Amino acid sequence: MADYRQHMPSYVITGASRGIGLEFVRQLSKDALNQIFALVRNTHTASQLLALSTQHPNIRVLQADIVDHAALKAAAAEVASATGGTLDYLINNAAYMDPERNMLTLDGYPQGQEALLEEDIHKFIQVNVIGVIHTINAFLPLVRAGGTKKVIAISSGVGDLAFTVEAGYVISAPYSISKAALNLAIAKYAAQYKAEGILFASISPGLVDTAQKPPDEQWWTASPEELEAFGQMIERFKNAAPGWDGRPIQPEQSVRMVLAVIDQLTIEDTGAFVSHHGNKVWL
Image 1 (cartoon, rainbow, N blue to C red):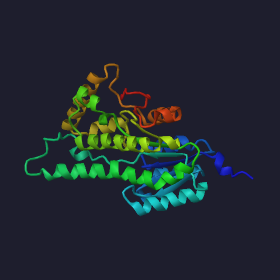
Image 2: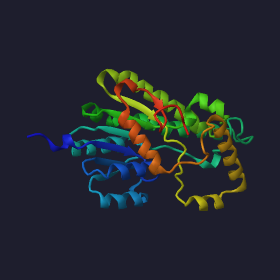
Image 3: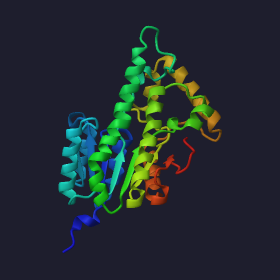
């Protein structure tokens, strides 16, 4: 008798407690045939995800920090136990973003506090690059045994060299650097596993409104300096994307578009770095 699990597409989604990670879980769980494994750093703070999992029995919440090797291996073992040792999709969404020094340039760190620059770059690389690599390595044996064989990294258009220069996007340097490095790591996997039919790709979700507060309230609580810097960033982005309306998109729209791109990608696209539009239009 055929194993029924072979007909149930399986997804591992990291960083699933909020934002687009939670939205991935929400949209994919609507299909009862999908098996969703939602990885979070701390289940105690994942109240929305846990509530969603009570409504959809095809969601299993697992606790695993992507910089914790042992936790990742344990999570992979749980997934393997549930799926018969296979995994169709690995969506690496977990990432680090520190808004405290987000507006600084590489040469804009306070005098006498230059060590903060090194600390920031190390932290962003540790989570956004090394953490994703460890996650891929933990789940790769399951992906190799799966049917669909797709590994996705949620990246960012600010990791694109041409867009950075064209838009004059000089701030958020450690984050941008980490996303550019992530794209190359994905390309390395793509080069190694193309012959096995495993697709690796980096996808930018666009500029997404992931604020936990309503947008209006978020604007009112922002400082004048933050509002000014945000406005300047939007104007720079408009210079690089003249047809853009200047507004972030909602997680629902972003995830819907990203899932469509994932579905369309073939092994011939492996190693690609594309946007939620499926091309190099980042906004």
